[in-house]
Length: 470
Ligand code: FAD
Ligand code: MLT
Ligand code: ZN
Image (cartoon, rainbow, N blue to C red; front, side):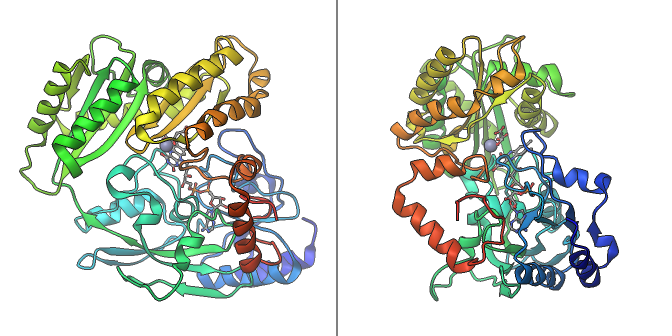
């Protein structure tokens, strides 16, 4: 951006250190982590308070300049990518924890607080903030809210939109909406905060939030279970629910190839089972009771499942350290996959019982389309949310493989649609899925989304071009 007057005004509002223009300074804000997108914006602003965010937005609104909010830049769908002429509004200086009310079970944090820091603050107060995902060391609360992030504890605690009591948002005209209420019940009209959650920055800049805290689990038991196939995994999940009810906290599905990728590329990954198996489930139970006999309960679930032929082998974590190694194995899959050449990703959801049929049909479809493609479907089985990812065939040309991405996505998403599923269960829409979502969602839903966008951001300056075309 060569608008010297605008730069001077931004500097006057938030100071010279908070307006970045040098290529080296811009780099981390422009490069999407998977290498699928690269932004071309020439300015990053880093306001240090809600008032500064409001001042920047007001200035941009007056000049019709597009604003792309950015948190940890770990998103999966190109939502934080900014074009030339737009500015990136980074939240990495909005890092205050404004209040923690342990008795009331809530915490008020600014949008730039890193997720792991919210978890740590909750833990220090003997509470739990349950959102948990592989990028938690770098994603920020504003990004989690704006993508309605999911992760590995949704089954028990819900996704981000279930964890919020109140929001503070800078609207596209620069006004501040202070909705930082800590109410558990409030039926005084539309639930406005929910419109901004999952909006991916297209309706305003979230600057702070009141988040729910929970009692800390005092007992946790986890097992890595080898199962013959996804149908057995679903049946195992059903039995765990029947026997342990609400104690079932996480149910993650992994194929052998995902484990091989993690073992091959990520330090500290261990396979605790002696022999390789085709499929695995990471099953975790937790309870707030200090003496809950969860390990015995897990043993009983597994024994019954073994009798029913649902389990080939299993290991129950003997210590907290071993439980962590199970989760490290699970979380390492994303990184492991990255080292295996191009990968075409999906983030689908179908009703849980249909996961096996989906996997069968989608695998057959992609293997027919790209012989030798390495199918690595893993993820949140308990939510029916599978990352149906495939890596390029060994030795294949990366660009040629990635060039098939849109076509493969369509084939897989046709199967998802036929099963009444979602083509974006937890990662959002961004740029990547915008046009496909518009094709597949009922026209009335797209029209309502456009009307909401038009009502809140009539000038179209908030994250232009993302989620839904104007
Ligand atoms: P960014 O990438 O910076 O932004 C994401 C979107 O939110 C963009 O559209 C941006 O414009 C908007 N935005 C950011 N901050 C604000 C704000 N303050 N106000 C308004 N809009 C804003 N996601 C899951 O849901 N579940 C997972 O299990 C999961 N696992 C992951 C594992 C790895 C290893 C990685 C790298 C990513 C994973 N993700 C997962 C995706 C990603 O971490 C989440 O989408 C996360 O919520 C994004 O947060 P962020 O701060 O990085 O947001
Ligand atoms: C995860 O659950 O680890 C991520 O959402 C994975 C991904 O889609 O690659
Ligand atoms: Zn996920």
